Length: 60
Image 1 (tube, rainbow, N blue to C red):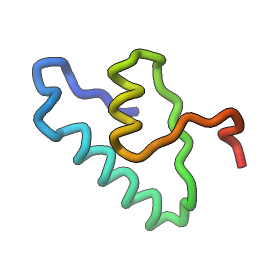
Image 2: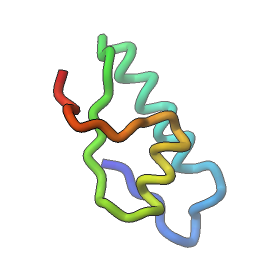
Image 3: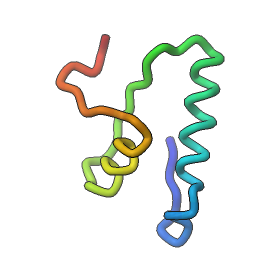
């Protein structure tokens, strides 16, 4: 789970957390990440900016 408090958003903290988490997942052998997130526009925009895509069939 990842959360950045409102006072600290926009400072690159979420980007760093996501990037490090993605790197650790790759080291562990992950090929695809499945992100389950609340449906707020801000959250969706963040993950899209990180390269995520909304999909109809998330489980491959």
